[in-house]
Amino acid sequence: MLIFPAIDLYEKKAVRLFKGDYNQMTVYSENPPEIALDFKKSGATHIHVVDLEGAKSGQTPNFDVIRAIKREADLFTEVGGGIRSIEVIDKYISAGIDRVILGTVAVTDPDFTKEAVKRYGNKIAVGLDLKDGFAAIRGWTEKSALTMDAALLKMWGYGVETVICTDISKDGAMKGTNVELYADLYERFTKKFGIQFIASGGVSSIDDVKALAELDMYGAIVGKAYYTGAIDIAEAIEVAR
Image (cartoon, rainbow, N blue to C red; front, side, top):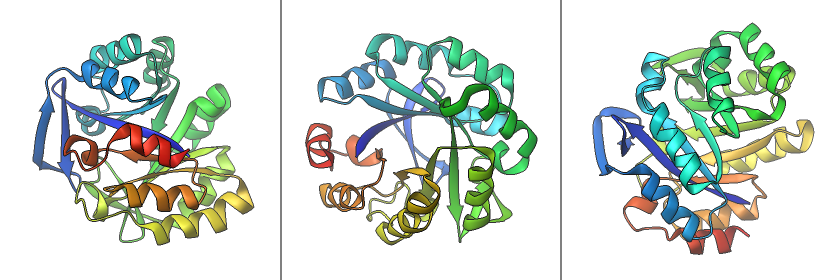
């Protein structure tokens, strides 16, 4: 299993939200590329970056910081947050970003999602954020009419290979990840359809990493637990391996 240490960006700073709430934000660093270099020193090969402002606006306000993270740390970098046009995908891919994550648009615009996958193949991933069993959209502020199963079957139909699946209720709460959810996803969607899942939300201890690795997840995102010191990235990578 791969470990994806996370950097969430807001106003060019590294921050974390509590359960996706923009009003409950903690700033951890004003130098995000430095954090990425720390991840690299710990043995990380992959990194997960989210533009929280972009998630709301559909623009790329933190583009320069993201490009600096990629250039300075030179890790496999996946980026999400408000990617809703081919132009923005092109902008990131041209800057050397390895994979872009479609969120809201994957749920609301099937034609665009199909076109993106057709053009960029496995450089496109989908972020499926779950709220009460439904796909959440627009920076987690709204619940769509699509259930988790319906959304995943649609993504598989579009040719999406990688899904970052977040249980919003667990995100940033430091109370453990939803192991049952990921076990279920692996059994029903990885084995049957080949979708590779990155677990996100609530990975708050080495035991969580161990449990997800035992499920044979493709990857796990470590966010707040790194910033609070609850998880050492080097240890997480070793356990995941």
